[in-house]
Amino acid sequence: MTNTDTSKIIDGRAVASKVEAEAAAAVLKLKEKGIAPKLVTVLVGEDPASQMYVRMKHKACERAGILAENCIKPADITEKELLAVIDALNKDKTVSSILVQLPLPRHINEKEIMNAVSPDKDPDGFHPFNMGSLMINEEGLVPCTPKGIIRLMEEYNVDIKGKNAVVVGRSNIVGKPMAAMLLNRSATVTVCHTSTKDLKSYTKEADILVAGTGVKHLITQDMVKEGAAVFDAGIVTDETGTYGDVDFENVIKKVSLITPVPGGVGPMTIAILMTHVVKCAEIIAAAENKK
Ligand code: GUN
Image 1 (cartoon, rainbow, N blue to C red):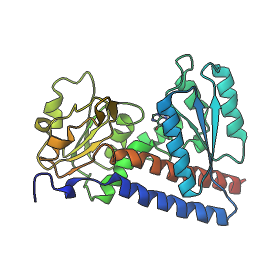
Image 2 (spheres, rainbow, N blue to C red):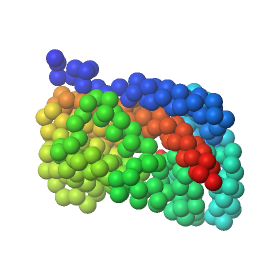
Image 3 (cartoon, rainbow, N blue to C red):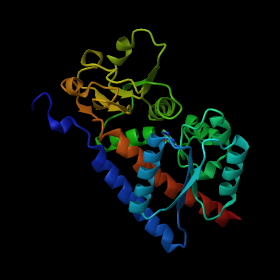
């Protein structure tokens, strides 16, 4: 085996295809029961990156047989108007999932908007109810990127229990929920962030290292443990190319498993989102049956 043996590279695209196929099969089962899962994305303004992400989510819905609509609003929409949009979608029985693409314009309070989405229609898992459930080890609708990383760990037989897991980054979307999911699976978890002193002293101890900072090549070869499993949720595009948080070319020489960027964690986020749209439809149907 050479130092850069391709067997070390986690194929996020392949696992994402498998997850999407599972979602598609679940959609067929729901349709047999007369339930058609439907995602409505809410896109505010004309940020090209957000437009691209929303397009990718719609294409994934098409592949999975999920109905999808895009609700586009101008950048100068007021918070009150946007809350009214969310309220109408919450009440619409044909809508199973609502995804408000972030970031929102600065005059809108993101927390207010996240709180307004019905927790049952929250495929992103960002609502405080869903986040709180995750914290008490009741994982239902959870943030898609860390859930995708957990699925990659399962697919590649990465043992979590009792391992030292270090998460670099403390965002609400990646770092914090990642730490909770690893803790729920009995890892010993350390969370590092911008105020951490001597980052390397922590990362060098990691059997499992997850980076989600958006800082290009923050994690270098000297910072990782021999044989570690490394998951890179960062993505930075500049004039020279697309990069992750991890210096892949050099770090791969030392570790046992690593996700590339692109083609690692990224495709998993959207695939997991599809499974969550299915889950929302199932939750709503179960609640209806109880009535
Ligand atoms: N913006 C960046 N990542 C995400 C995500 O996972 N969900 C939503 N809704 N917006 C995002």
